[in-house]
Image 1 (cartoon, rainbow, N blue to C red):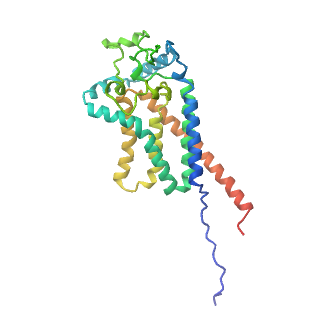
Image 2: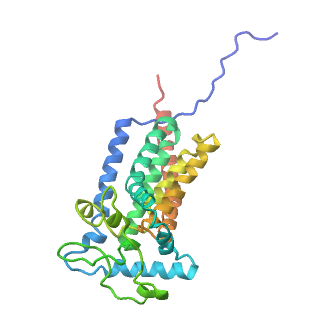
Image 3: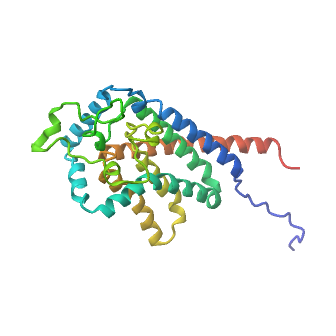
Length: 292
């Protein structure tokens, strides 16, 4: 005979320690403001008057030498091939100045709404990789390709290295390094090396490329939500398009992109560790103060 008064089974429900949207907005805003402030205290901010940016130029030469040794130094040829297609260049200029921020912000909001259980993990990952990037900007200021042939600093501005003589400048019969500053030549949302944007941006914050780092972050953060094939293809195309963009606009070398992947991987492990540690702390607090 069965007992009709069986004790009800207790089903364990995973707890999601969800935070408040305004709290996250405040955290992100403060973090980004601090990141921008620290980033812009170094690199081009240290170039005053007619100072020659020899350090960042020398680091660019180091990157070029490494890429040549690896058979990767083709950025100038790729840019030169696409320069006649002005519509594409202008589109990439706009893409470079906007997608990096707005897509990341959109993914951040989507994570908060659709993946609250791992939101903290990916928020911490983004913060960790951005912090690691600051270390790179400080320790390895790097002149981007677009500035190698641009005018050197003067009383009227400028952040380039055209006045610096080097054997690689005319390598293989080329005239100078051969890169174009596509925003300065063809226009875009704003020019990073002149006007108000120049004082708000570190011109030599190129290694690692956070355009690649953040776009990769977007893919992995949203991948579980991309159930359909076309969505996964679209996700894959985002960092691929970003890689093409940073090269064709002369803003980065290939190795900058690799640096962006490195900070993503390291940032992911840091972010995951912090997320799990925080969950254990909150679980312990809830266990010691059970709901009445």
